[in-house]
Image (tube, rainbow, N blue to C red):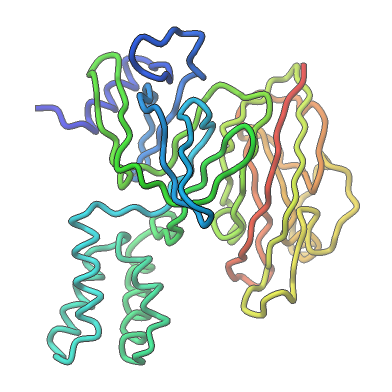
Length: 333
């Protein structure tokens, strides 16, 4: 019997399926194809048959029509059984029995990346031994697993035409349909990203400095397709802290910590000599093309076709940055 994951991979080879509302929706009512990225790195195109998605935010619950969703960057969602195992292992860390504390440590290391967020929280535990064991667990996880798999952000980022919503998706699963294999259920614990492939008139996204500005090579795929015949416009706002160990002392805008006056689109090579000048600055590239400076504003014709990628230049002190930029992207023929 074929597993769901194998079926989805076969669907990619056989051909894409349009993103739609389900039922008898006509092609012109559909917002375009959707590409789903799974936790294991695989990607598929399929049709999302979900009327709405419920998101719990700090201001209450929002119900977002599925046809309004341009992109979702999923936070960490654990399968119920895995979440239960993580909670039980964390409980054992504070046990009065030495054997249970040892068992909890081994269990969390064995659980791998799903235990990373819990271990990060345990570092701040009031019990010094629990905190010390959590540090040991983190060191073991970082040594055994690639950085991209060690995720701690619980919030989901949902980009819509009007704004980006930050919250926790509480819809337990997404209904989807493949032309070749019928209806499927996508569990949140399986998903890393979902995006509409068709460009909106304007795309608004949030780029997180911890994910895409704490090391070189951390590029965010915006999913926005750049055409050689269209003028691309990008504006960015917000602030990031390139040294959050002393909060508020080293704040940067999209122009960079040195508040550069460069024009957006300038070709800049970031090297050891000028590294500090561009820490925190927003850069872009189209496909695998040349890297160019965006800062807080860029408008021009990149002269290349492909997806737009964004990156925040990391701190020169080799530490993780915090904060985010809000970015608007549009194209005009």
